[in-house]
Image (cartoon, rainbow, N blue to C red; front, side, top):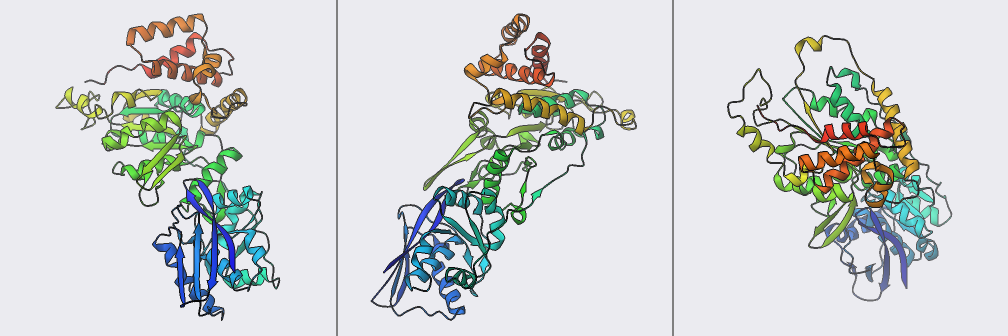
Length: 504
């Protein structure tokens, strides 16, 4: 008799259905697993055998063969334990074979038969819903899987609970979705003294998901400004929360099955490797740019990152997705993030500070910022200089709008964009608009177009820079709730794009 159960193999955020076939046949006693398993999957036979022994179920003195189909798909992870055990129990006629076939299972088994939480329950639930099957997983993992809503999710604590469920002795109860976590940010924009131009740039960047770079002396407030971006961003929409949580589920970052509606804010250290930033390593796992999907990627000390790491950002910035290509895997991850970079003007940091003369000016600045290639710099929509704050200003009371006030304007601007791009699949904010869509929504009036053409000719702007200025101008108009892109919108967008060269 050949019994069947089902599980999934992860390829990026996609979970591919895997059929687990179990045959118990006469022959020398053996327990083998075939179908391209990795070391972790091959070790499942010992965990399954011990878990069954803890339930007083002895394996017969026969040849047991487990086949994971399709056989050419690599199988990785300890979550194959539970489906292998289900298929074996069905083959031994301990549980009904038809119920095992209607289940997508994943979970790691302890030697005493208890089920250990695994990563990826949320993508697995999506596949179970598509296949119209029930998802069976460890109880701690069931809360995140239940967020899908379209599939019945059962959470069990032990393998014994699973057997009692399928034999009708003690049915498992459907899992309930975890809590929605609220992550209030106590950091307010009003805590930043001065830097009104930088605050305005933050608001524009947040409203249209524009990439921004801040250049300033040490201690001028670049990191302080970036840390307040989450407080002015609107919460995730349901679709954004689901796509973001699927990546977090693969990395085991969902806390007790709860989903956060707060946009991610990732700030990797400048010593991070390419695999850590872009994705890769064993199993081609998602990197920081994918963990920042629908949120913010803040890269402090931007020129200090390895040149190869910086250059790999160019394609994901444009497309909103990254292909992690390895010898045995080609996996695509979404990475529609807002890049915020911070840099000193030179190695010592004081090239633009009149009170501290840089000993190597101006070559120090050229050499240091020269680590950022022209094509990468061209992808920043907003470029601002953050000057040092005078000591006398630090004693002044808070000034400017609070994060709550700015967040309301950002949310209103994003609402305008949501209505504008409602019928488009890959366009969500102004930063995504291109081609005919950009021409339709961001063509300026006659005076604005004349100003833009004059600036493009005067400063030798690239075609990419030209279109990015239009997108920023469209966002500025949305913040003012203006239907048309006017001359002063273009002028402000140009002011954030065309900056004087950083010199002493």
